[in-house]
Image (cartoon, rainbow, N blue to C red; front, side):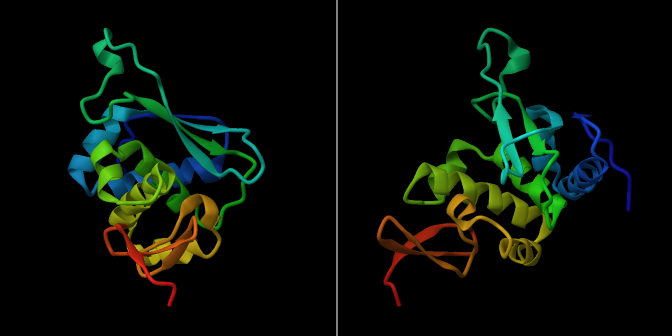
Length: 181
């Protein structure tokens, strides 16, 4: 594997997460526009103690609009950190990191394009869209069996029930109303 310089700091002593971050960044680096956007947005990846069951979280900073170093044209929330739960055991740590990087990469346009019934489902689907774009849908499907579907939503080809309404999810992670059968 080619070694790719990571443009952000890893904080914490967790060899599994540190290795996963390196592999995830090498994967994203094949997509130069996405890698450039993430290099402007992600400041730190931190292995921290989080609530049981949580694997990771994108934590945007709340920018000072008068400080250009805190505002990104790509993400109105400006830069931020990715937190990874140092107590978590994850079946595919690289995909977990890619999912959190997907949250960092998500724009308002991505949220809008999902046509999801809630902003939460749109956000999770956008993060999964990027993770699948970078690592492949097959790898996301393998990880999907161990994920919390109430939190992370579905994947292409699945039918999901949200607030008494059924939706099909297409290959671009767009929600389409459907019938139950």
